[in-house]
Length: 557
Image (cartoon, rainbow, N blue to C red):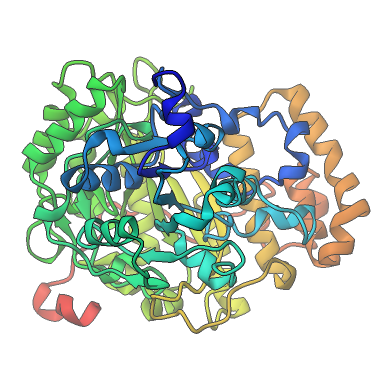
């Protein structure tokens, strides 16, 4: 900046993301996810100052922001001079928004904190609690610098969470000109050019999956050093929009250029971002391309400056089909940022990847997500999960798994089957996140009713709190902290929990507080006292059905 020129006149186009969605605190994705669950009004008592821990460049621009915003930035550089585009955090908006500004582009990953993994948790503090993510996004979209110059600029919001704003009817209240839904590579340049001219913009744009050629190389650093390796999935899960799009892989040269750009901007960690790691350069019918995956990991690791590799999502079935794949991808462990004393790696490192298990009910699995088990049959799902977890754990892969409570039509027997699978995984090395079903509008279940925390049954509460009991035990909180937490459980229940959710949560909640199982077992479905055998165990092998006897891929989808 020269003599405050930027501050007085502003940049033509300003791109911004909330600090809670940009933070790289401890290189931990799960800590970032927590920011969509913890209530803002209590944040100062929870030690979450790291929620706004970000770094700026000397000129006030953002050092790292979500990858989606970096993609938009790179696309705009094709049409506009680089000096006309600024990417910043909310606290620096007043440096870049001014008389010359014509467009504000806002990234929305989880702007209201209502995705599957996060919708439920803020509710434990009361219905009116606003999650940190929601507070931080509202702080962006209602920023005084935007309001001051609103008469001559357009506001465009896009990202994977843009649907939340439309779903809650907040577009008009927040004075947003356009909501962009989906993968926007093929519309961004024209949309922003129209906005710069001052043309009328559509209220919403629904984007189709773009060609690979339209996906740009990100010029600047993304949060966590994100580098995309695939788009789409194609497994056809009815609750997920990405699963309905065919999977496609970016070329290795494209990926490595992105990696080098991330490193050049100061990143020493690369997050390989995908809907399913094992679909990278896939063969027919979801066949894992082992050679391509090994080349990918080795190529990324060989880029000078890369010290760590992080993973995003994957599925369990490919590991059971090809057990050696996780051993071959040992760099995921060797270069991991995660450590745990149960890891047999010399440095106690483990690879962490998000894996959607979603249900232990074969009936619900067959109805809503049967492509997830391919090439195995839906009725083999519990066996696939047990064997896949065994294989991953032996290779020091400790996955972060999700289960969905409240899928449409879920019965008590369905919940019992999920509890049986959960019980069978009691000694696994993993993290398990219980979520509530959210009907995403662009999915096949978009018109169904969502699950609500206040409507959970006693069995669903048992599943929910047993998951978190597992997590607390596995990650071994300090005894002094654990004692205080356990003591707080009955205090919470009798002062707030019972009033908000009724008595059905009582005994499941007390399990989370480590109350004696001999006392709890008469009130709960699962009996964790000594000698109670699990329903499932990991078999020696899980047979793959003959393809001729199994559905074609297009039928699965």
